[in-house]
Image (cartoon, rainbow, N blue to C red; front, side):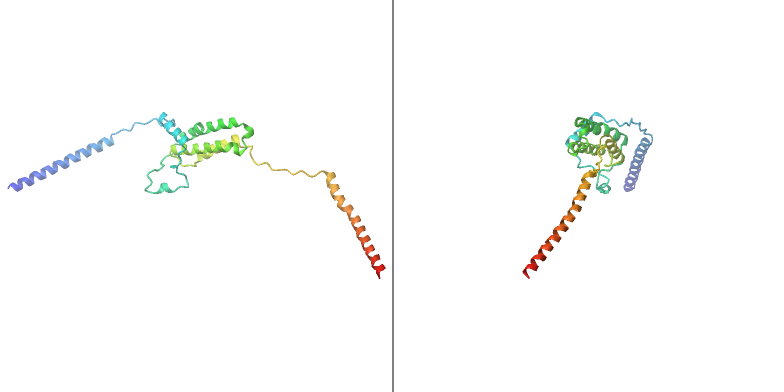
Length: 211
C-alpha cells in the first residue's frame, strides 16, 4: 500500500514538471513569435568609434586577416569568419573619403608634371591601394571587388590618362646626306679598279724583266 502511494506521488510530480516545462516553452515560443524587430536606420555613416578603429588599422597597416577572391580558406568549416554581406554603399563613399582624398592631396603636391614619373607616384599609389584593401575588409567585402576596380579606373582617368608610352618616331636623314653617302662608295669603284689594273701591269712588267 505504501509503495502504491509513493508511486502515485512520483507520477503526479513528473506530470506537473512536464506541464511546467511545456508552459515555459510555450511562453518562450509565444514571446518569440510576438517579438517585433524595430527597424534600424541602416546608413553608411560609421560611428565615431568605428572610424577611429578603421583609421588605426590604416596607420598600423593591418592586412593579415584580409580575405581575397583567390583565397579559398574561407570555405573551410574551421574558418570562423564569413563575409555574408558587403556594405557596398559605405565602401564606395569611404573609398573616396578615406582613400581618394589623401591620394588627391599628395598628387596635387607633386604637380601634373610629375604624375607620369613612377618613382614619384609609387608611394601614394601604394598607400591608396592598402587603404582600399583595409576598407574592403572593414565593410565585409572581398578584395579586389567591382567597386574598388571602378574606383581605380576613376583615379587612372584623372591622373594617368596621359601617361601612355609615347612611340619614338624616327626621322629620315636629310636628303643631301643620303646622296653623299650613296655617291662616295660609287665614286671609289673606278679608283679601286684603276689601282687594281695598275698593280697587275706592274707585276707583269717585273716578271718579264726577270725572265
